[in-house]
Length: 510
Ligand code: BES
Ligand code: MN
Ligand code: ZN
Image 1: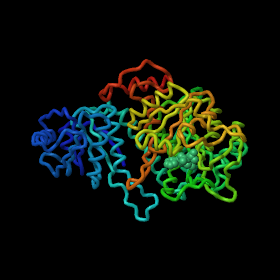
Image 2: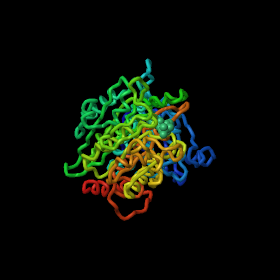
Image 3: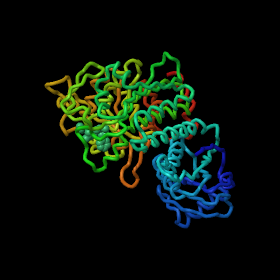
């Protein structure tokens, strides 16, 4: 699918030949003298197009318009969330369209333009990788109509780059375990290194043993699939600029190991590498957007299986940090692979480390599928991630890290146990990780509830690629750049050009 940016006013949109014209109509819509606003005004007046977000009206070959189908989609006050909802609905109803023109019967803001582009991609995505007769995505071209191409360019490029990242994350998240082994995941990462500025190094069992990653290795030892430790680098700034390190949990299938999971919905544990997929997605987007920053991606990838050689409850392993861990439950394997990756992260002297993991069922209970869980030892980092989540419509919610939560991780047989009781399970998992994060700014995103959807809409969401890119590009609802504290600014709905130039300068200076 290709996105094109085009300067078109309302009469330009009316004259643009396409299978479908999707018009976002805000509450305060003012009719002009063109054919398109004529139709909107008529429909409004007749009571056939309610102004509430989610209401829509379909027209077929309306007179004066070059489009075959026209969807008028109301967006209420026109928040980014309302625009997303409307566009998802509209694209869903226009399934057969190959060439779609997307326009707004009012001014786009940077946020609504980005939300609309993300929504078009989300609603038209189709999974094909393991179908014998794949029905490919019909939508081939999306023309995004704006008042002035030059003013909208930066927001458009960022949105289109982000879409590429989200789609790669969805793709790898959705692939079944036998089509997304640690080795295949590593190959996907190597493929990304074909883009300029991206490098990839893959470590296997021997190198990982040499590093002393006894915790990571213990998870992989029950599987026939060899582990992989993937190191990605995006070098967009000078070597002297400290990178942000992203660590993605890459359990390509989680049976629970010897502490085996019940059969019901176990298939969904193919999604247990969605943290890793989000890291791949971020790098795919960085390749498109080419910002002047440095980013490192670390992915400990393994399969968690029961076997004669598998790690057993009660086994004690030595992590790369030197801390010994008593594995009381082999199903709490995510933290065991992440802790060694967090130790490895230290060598990059990062400005911040962010791990992303489908870590706990407890986080699903706490926050459901709406917000990811956020934990951090650093206020500035936490606030920047919270703001980035709001700006990207990929929100998270901060949970506590009081030391009292770590009490349950005490054991008589090692420095730390890998599980505490059932209570506060998302927090105790984060407390375990915190022991390995050191003193640098660190954040943990528990995406167990947000990385995929179950039921009939079963599939990867591509989250939190949008949040992470929003953070890395310094593009948050408050306008605050990542990590560095700045005076807060009001999050006003600005017209498209308002922010992009200064944001670029800030990034270059950072
Ligand atoms: N991958 C799971 C977490 C998970 C479970 C995500 C269900 C989404 C839905 C993780 O490895 C796990 O099994 N966690 C255990 C931890 C427990 C043994 C302390 C859990 O949450 O039950
Ligand atoms: Mn598990
Ligand atoms: Zn898991």
